[in-house]
Image 1 (cartoon, helix red, strand yellow):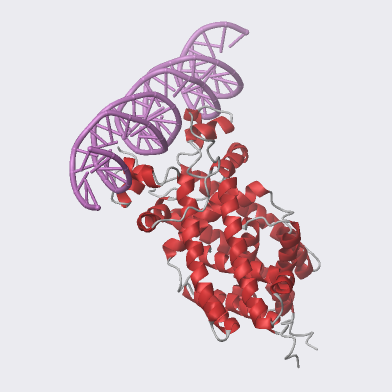
Image 2 (cartoon, rainbow over the protein chains, first blue to last red; image 1 turned 180 degrees about the vertical axis):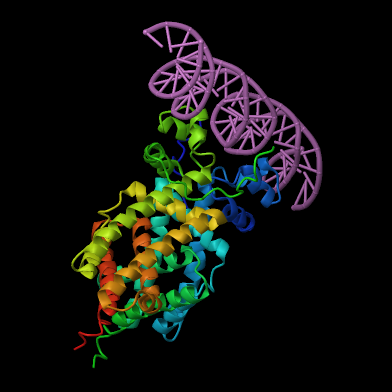
Length: 214
Length: 214
DNA sequence: CGGGAGTGAATGAACGTTCACTCTGTATTG
DNA sequence: CAATACAGAGTGAACGTTCATTCACTCCCG
């Protein structure tokens, strides 16, 4: 009662202590198997190897879990981008990484399921929508940064000129991960075609290199 | 007891009587707002304007509802394709229809939410995955049929050569509908870019027209 | 001995599913 | 024509289950 005014909105990006990361890793498959609304707190606590009461000490609500999962995935993407931006040929490294993503080599099918779940939840619950929008915005910004590096344009100009390209690449990667799996011959053809689309987008950007125009 | 052996799997595509269509139209927004697992049978019955017990007479399970919703959407797509295939310039009509889709003019945001929900459920529950795969396969087949008409190729050849194109168009349309909404300037740029990708795919197919090569 | 980690039973609400029942219009029979 | 039978649409209380959330409590380490 006499305590000073509480901060109404606690920092939405709490530091994510290692214990919480462990828990998230443990409950991830449960969310993937049962969905965000299908998994009960009991399910999650059991998967985390602890009692229900204790589980609440780490995550006070479902939304908090979802936000934390998004945060973790964003962290992972960040480290991947650090490698790309730091590579001798950022554009080539980016191309390779994107191809691997499209070939589903960088994320499990459980991850894809989780992504589809998050996409659906984002359209339903505004608070999750905001977190997801922020994440996709940051990824697009990383892409634009790589574009700037590769073209020699300033980050602002690269963002203005190729921001939509970045957004489309994000969309393609997400869509190809969450899309219905196809039988071998068709699935492979689609994968190749998506890779070709991405290559086309990257080529278009690389062609912008001001000094090396033919 | 003395009755002849029952058919174990009733026809998965029951004719969908008009009353059931009414009910589906009524509960659609509830599913969109609360999700497939979030909406309770009580919620659905109330939205349909009837008692719980009666609701079960129409849909004995959640999965049955989802299948029926997919069936209805497929019907709608079918009638749209009938118009396209019957148009004097099928390829141009297809292009126009796809552009309108990308501009979100042919489906409400509730529809998009429902699609995201179905996509997520398909990855989680195999029976829904099968129904969705069948639907997307049929849509891709319709596209291939339009391609065949426009190029003069036989349906088989068109399917073999441009099946992946059809799949990619399906993927792009779905992804653009379920993707996070962007603020005005970026969103418009992305829309234009997606339309350009689709145009590129269609142009590539149209260039295959055997008699009119330059 | 103080505090953070962890427990799991308890509570009340909400859930899915069933079922005995009512109502209403239509056909059947005397 | 009137009485009756019947089928199908619709009801909502009732059942047992599961859920989210809380809390008094224990454990263990520094």
